[in-house]
Image (cartoon, rainbow, N blue to C red; front, side, top):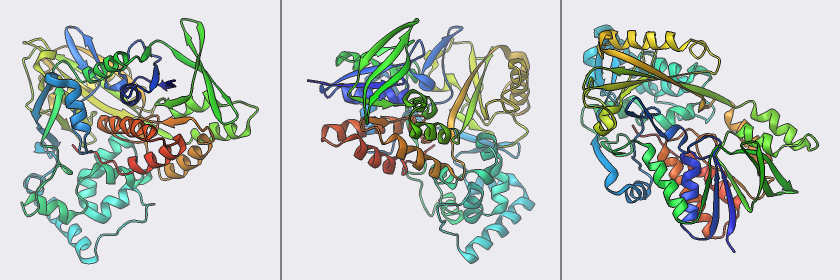
Length: 474
């Protein structure tokens, strides 16, 4: 008899796990998604004859076998791109990842001398190895010097994550390929070559939008007998002692109860804890209190539609300087020309804030006006080209690693692990900052280990160790 697996959330984390499990033929997979469609933040939607992604996405992975899985899934739908990224600094567009020679030419003599003196001080004393408790600021300063930190690393981190002095160094170690000033300098002058671990030269992208990957996963789940329930909200998890037995769901005010042998959650942890919790059980009261300590950054995407065929020659561009509202932009047409009308294009401006923060509370009109103004000031567009706009807001888009997040997660996980047939996956479900390829890897890891007969608690522990080693490669 097939084991009945319920997966909460139809984003890339939930669908990847469902796809990997369904294709074994040993599981009766049911995906529960509260939105009308699957895909989550990796979906693609249609707007004014445009197909649009929720921000820039790419298919690339250094994890063994994951890119092959995606290539096999997508077949001839994949386009292969030679990556073109840049970063706007000192009123110039520099190649990204940053080349020190390029940076040196643009930053000016004074900044160059100060960066050199700062780096020399590091080389004389040696970079610290870190004790696992350092902040993002300490990590960067100890490896690259304070001047380079102030010029490059601090402003971009502050725009994306908030005050870097209150941010864990784990974000830096996952995001930044160079481990020291010397490492970056040697690659910049050619004494050390970039590798797939530091720079993705090529990446893949579906012709009709990144969301096609999620649709293909959905098609595979259904092909192997799985069920996908959209516009369906989990209402309550029934558990007897340490085992989940049923999930109650709501659809159009109708309640239904689904039997469950294994629950995999990719939804926010506070929502999961609330579904599990009961006022009569002290451990869930503790969990509800602890989960509130986890921090998130919310995302705002401003789409600016233009009467132009194309306006950039980059796949995405970073903007660290604080006087520019967005931290990144991308032109959808650069990913696939099939997604936009021939004579028009669209720029997506991407930035983050705390929910109910200053930018978050701005009106849509104010945000659009500021984005258009900054796009024009940085030389990307002319205001006269603009013919419309659209805004999408994503609450709690990124897990934010504060200085105590590991301790918070360890305590929370210990309470959740009391449930023997529960697993977590995905960026939000596992509270792990990662890319879509990592979510596919999590799904495959869970499926492979269940097939090997491992119990959920052992898989969970090993998965924690695995995701701690994930690296973000731009």
